[in-house]
Length: 255
Image 1: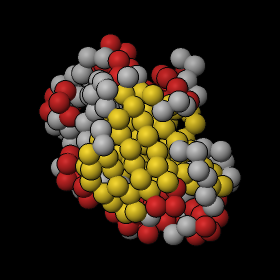
Image 2 (image 1 turned 180 degrees about the vertical axis):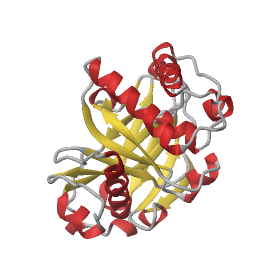
Image 3 (image 1 turned 60 degrees about the vertical axis):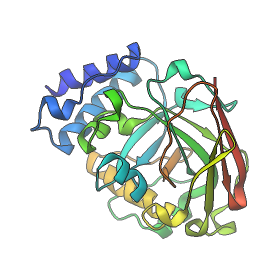
Image 4 (image 1 turned 90 degrees about the vertical axis):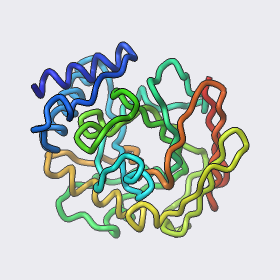
């Protein structure tokens, strides 16, 4: 069934038609099974010419864990085709998008677990930037648990990086403050402490978790460290703005 579920999720992405909850179809599925499903589709995308450009950590904040009813983080892969360069998100490329503001790390050294700590992450980081991640789900109505989101590449969609690059020595990551606005209206707020206490700790968790799968975080990769607050849904015409202390403002528009 692992191969069947991977194909169902892949075809849902291609057709833009969501599927039923796979964990309900087979309640015996484990998180390990879910990561196998994810990795099958990673290989499928690579064989189709996609290029991995980074990784993403999901469900690091209590707000997102509560929203989806889960109690632990997860990870997914970023592909070059996911990067939004002009801050315009094509809504037709998505199924049911939600918008997250977070901190992205760009690495200058490889990170390989299992014993990576925060100091290692800071040492390996070239710079950090504010980012929007547009999460998406191939499962109908976001009716998912940890199994479903892991299998679905951590509910990945696309991402946008801000232009202001900061060295980790120039900023206190846990003290970053973020306010999120949708169409000019305040939605919610968060801080760096809302993602496992420190965005850098999230990256350390990721490097150590990936070591279980013999996966490395490579120099030059983008690492999305997790949503600083709950993710509101997006539709065509919506404009999201995140205001992040030292980083200034970043904006995405759904067209």
